[in-house]
Length: 385
View 1: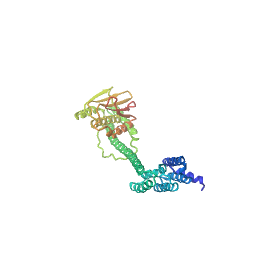
View 2: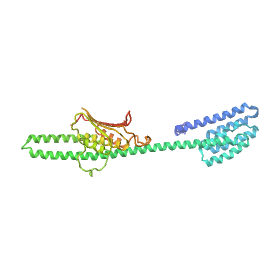
View 3: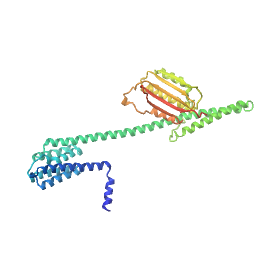
View 4: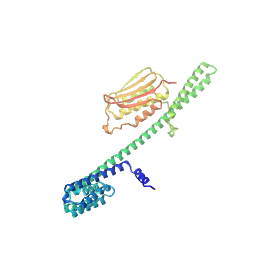
């Protein structure tokens, strides 16, 4: 294997943080060595070329300070003492490599190892008149602080990542539950429609010979019900394609619709919610699936207002346009919980968005400019069967 291929594999094995750490170590070693040699040259009569070489060796050893902090501390301290023995001159500048090594020891090792390295190093450096024990202690304490800070930041990042994963899982569970609920309601809708169709066909057969016009009208209504149910099935199948929830136990009952909106508003009024209902546009029959989605969205929005805010005024608006139905719920309340504890995107909103998306609609939920909260749903109705 060639030298270039080995170097290439080493470079590929180093991550970006590793490369930055290596560059930083080289810069620290170069700056420390430059300071040491610069001071020695400035005081040239007190130094020899051997002392300068030993100081350069001590500074160069700092390149390996992260890999072997204890070895680097022993080496730099020994070299500093050897420089003193060879030259017989003192000076604070020669303490730079050991001080950096003490800092690294505090940053990379435990308290016990840092103290075991600090005590002998500080005693020797003070005995050789290289640096004071206070400087050594401050170097270790600074390293310990950076280590604790790094661990704290790492813990926060891990916790944030964990919460994000947990939130994604909860959102997925909420969507699955909501889809299962939609499947049960679809079961009710289809069961009700098929029952009506069956009774209509039987009635048409009974009067087919005696009242053909009445039979024809009955069969036309059966055809419309069948087409409507088929359209609802096509819309919902994309939402339920991954859901495998048994729905046989769901009770057969007529699905709620906007015909019961007055009863829904009255129910929430009885619970203490000051609601004002405003209906704009001509009321007309809509597909059962759209009626059900609009009713459930309105019900969930009012439930959220009742649970999460202290509203003094709630406005419910139903606007029947030529191409879409708009459902809007505005309230002027403030959250019952502290702002930092209120979920930014609750499961109820996810459920409303799922229901609207099943009919090519959309739901938005945001804070109103004047305060309070607004839920707005738009459901296409132009292609009514």
